[in-house]
Length: 95
Length: 377
Image 1: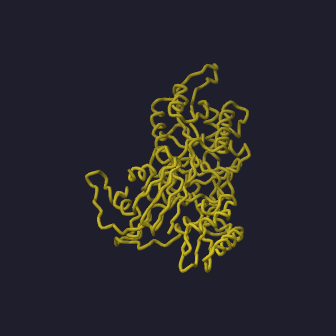
Image 2 (image 1 turned 120 degrees about the vertical axis):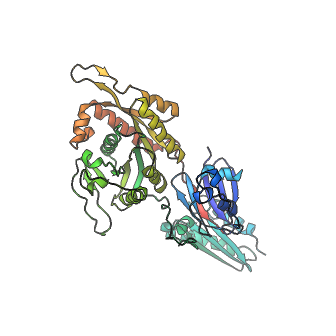
Image 3 (image 1 turned 45 degrees about the horizontal axis):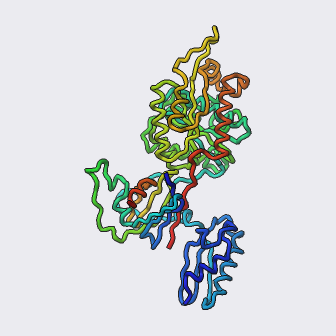
């Protein structure tokens, strides 16, 4: 399991960059992170409840907070802040 | 025109905040702006070291000024973005009409506390609290400054195990509580605040907020280790601890029987999921030696926890026998590790404490440094 060493919001919060200790680095747009937020507000409680979030082309990350050893909480400028992004989930979004 | 590359080349001559890695490689550069030949650079530093960083700042400014074509240079020191952001007001907030939402707090270390470890089990009744209490006293005997947080709000055991019955007093700041002390260990438990036998009947959110108070609104002082006695299971308390504090590791207590081991496996899987390193597994009630005839009986079977630990690749910390002296002394509020230090039981527990202390000193297997979080331009 590779481990994140650096997590950076760039380009005025439009892009999240994560560097892993195996030398790999991923880049995710804030829009992608927002519409694929792992929060139950987006995912519901089963795949059938998943919501399609639209109109987030210009969303930006305003804050990133660590959650324990395993995830980050991303605060977006549209007020969404209930998604906890685990290291595995970030990697999954990048593929 | 001055280029960004020229600035980076010039800054490569300046060692960064750690005094070694040149600034462009240090990761501390949080913003480089060029406007009309003027260069603005921000260097993120730990605010506590602001004074010590001043020569670095001045040098960075000087090398940029020396670049041909640069009309002026301003280099500023800024507090690390992660901290600044954590305290930032909630941006644009509340889209819904409800009250502002607080989904837990970000994970913050406890000031003054070096390592926080959880003592957990999947199943109740395996002697987790007794092991936690003796482990704490054992660590104190090894010369460490130790505290115990009783996180089992529904069934607090620490007041009884430590023989503490008074109420904690309020610190001079009028906000925080002073933990009680016994056998050289600072102890905080919800059991100090309610009558013995009174039930705590709460839903999850109350548990979460009470835990945060017991953790953060207590004058722990300087501690090497804070031992957290977890309730059984994998619920609100475990998740709160996993999210709100950086745990250095977890100790899993199990009896050797299959029924308990199944739950222990669940506990281990939970800690794996939230990336908390496992310090090891303790087999409690490992065997019983008859005080009358000296014959040994493996009441709950034997060796199961060791096997399980091997199978899962987790260190095995030791076996503690099922023994009436442990029960009697525990019920009297005298941890056996202190009251019968020469006994086999005490030795087994002290050995476990020693292994835990060694693992903490060396770094738990699989422990990873927290990633650096930054908001860049």
